[in-house]
Image (cartoon, rainbow, N blue to C red; front, side, top):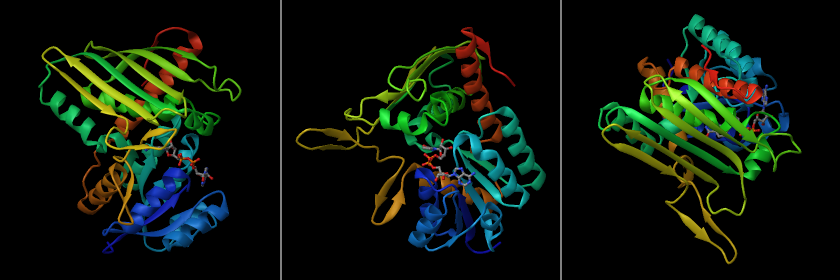
Length: 335
Ligand SMILES: NC(=O)c1ccc[n+]([C@@H]2O[C@H](COP(=O)([O-])OP(=O)(O)OC[C@H]3O[C@@H](n4cnc5c(N)ncnc54)[C@H](O)[C@@H]3O)[C@@H](O)[C@H]2O)c1
């Protein structure tokens, strides 16, 4: 293995550019090639970060020295890039959700297993110390058995407008909390009942919000609040919370940029500085920790912190939410 792991990034939107920057900056990795369906975008990122702009997926994956690949394309188009990367013998870090169908999840998992390469889904919240502390406390039995769970992820409306035409709010935002709930409690969600409404994004059309009641396998009940139409003028562009009430205690995390405020004459903003912040010309925060972790797992031949089964299970719950919305009935989570 070379001293620095060579990385390629497929899909160079908001997340792909950040992945590329981190791979270019980490001491243990170097950015070799980038590819996007829009050639000008690949050329721009390649010039900015000093790597090759590939003209196609195969070229990006086959570039000399590439050992790992970040797949940062839209939710519904993860499969082709992940399978091709695995077949080329590259380790795969794919943005959440793993895919948007269980068939696609299985194809990705099978291709990575067959090629004996590592696969991790970018559930970034697992690298947020607030949620990690919840997990550690619940895992250590400090709150007893889970009784009630609440998770909220509300985003400002530009997020719904940008992503709404391509995927659902359950798949794009809800999947973060589905994974967190299952990881923190150590229990799978077995049944969901969801209600949605569409007013702000009715023209797209997309759901504004989905409220889901769920049951965990240990008997606890919970609510998932997932929305992407809070007004753009809200000080917090993200309002996320998680609470687990147990038989002997409670844990709660609040995520929304309270760490930093900026006010102008007509607007107050609370910006997240935990997942991504540029500091002294380098990207820091949860995304960097996540990518560092994946590179360390490759070098030390360790299993990544987020298993393929966990990532697939979160997709299964999001799909059950979709089925419940269609049928108007509670739905068992598929396997
Ligand atoms: N971890 C997080 O907090 C987080 C936040 C936002 C988005 N995401 C996830 O990251 C992924 C990308 O989201 P985004 O917000 O960066 O989207 P985006 O729209 O900003 O970028 C997607 C990019 O992928 C390119 N693309 C699409 N299909 C492609 C293909 N087949 N081959 C090559 N390039 C292709 C598009 O041209 C575009 O440049 C999604 O799966 C999303 O759910 C994760």
